[in-house]
Every structure is written in C-alpha cells, then in structure tokens.
Length: 119
Image (tube, helix red, strand yellow):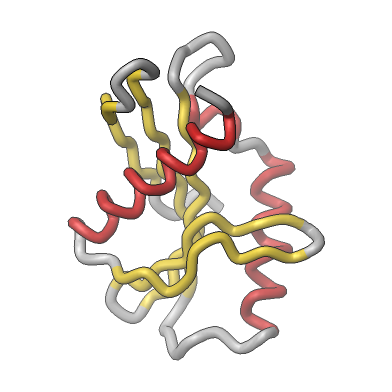
C-alpha cells in the first residue's frame, strides 16, 4: 500500500471516528502553498484543526511521533491563513491529532488515538 493510500485511509477512519464522537466536518484537506490541514471540524462551537497520521507498521515509530515541534509550527501558520480567509462562526480554536494504526493487508483499522489540544 502506498503512503498516499495509507494517508487517505487514515483520514477516512479519523473522520468517521470524530463524527461518531459528535464532531461536524467543516472542511477536508485545506490546501495552501505552505501545506495542508487534514481535517477542520466543529466540536460544539469550537473549531478544531486535526492532523491525521496513519501507519501500517511500527518500522518508523508510532504515528503520533511524526507530529514534531516543526509540524505544530506549520499547523499554526496554516490555521492563521485559514482564519484570515474567513472561517465559519466559532468560539475558540484547538489543534488536535489523530493517530491511526492500519492492518496493511486487510485495510482494517486496528486502533485510533485522539490527542486533544496538542499545541
């Protein structure tokens, strides 16, 4: 399975998980020339920007280990751009991460870990 496929599958699984928790999707894959925000969700009236990391093995570590200080800085920059372009009505913002472990042969979601307010 290619990295792009793993990423898309991980985003799909994360989105289903968050919607099951009561979050509502605002936007998916918000692109700028500086990068991308995976999922933008509303939890109640709070706007939540979600970085999704998916893995099919532990060869390169846990999925959440890929969320570095540099990645958080980039997320903050992208959030500022998104907000400047006119975000939906909200009360507060938050950065979250969702780590998804995927079984590579069956594409079955093995586990999902949700980290709130990561930065």
